[in-house]
Every structure is written in C-alpha cells, then in structure tokens.
Image (cartoon, rainbow, N blue to C red; front, top):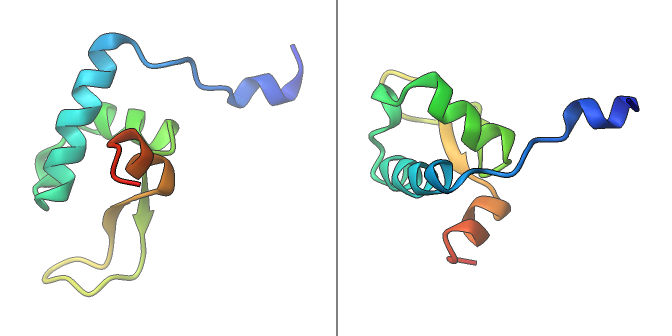
Length: 77
C-alpha cells in the first residue's frame, strides 16, 4: 500500500450522506455543540466543514464552518 492511500477516505454510504445533510443543517443553524464527534468527524474527513479559529462568538474561540466542498455538497455553490 502506498502512503498516499493511507489518507483516502472511503465514499459515504447512503445513510452517511443523509446524516451529512442533516448535520450540515444543524451547523447552519449554529446548533452543532451537541453533535456527536463521530458524525462531525465524517464531515471533516470528507472536507465538508473545517474548524475555524479564531472567531468572535460568545463563550468560544472556535467554530465549525462550511468549506467550498461542503457548499457544493449542499448545492449552494
């Protein structure tokens, strides 16, 4: 196995795609604080979101934001 293959992410399953749409809607509403890490990790692995630092929000210095790929996934870009 070549080292570049270590970082390939398998395609999302149908269930993961449905969860990703729901999770991205949660993020758009700013309600991602209770999102399980395993679900957020899928969005990060597929480069649909990124962790932004620093941001100016009450009580936090980080936020989850959409990437260009995430906007394409939602068909917003």
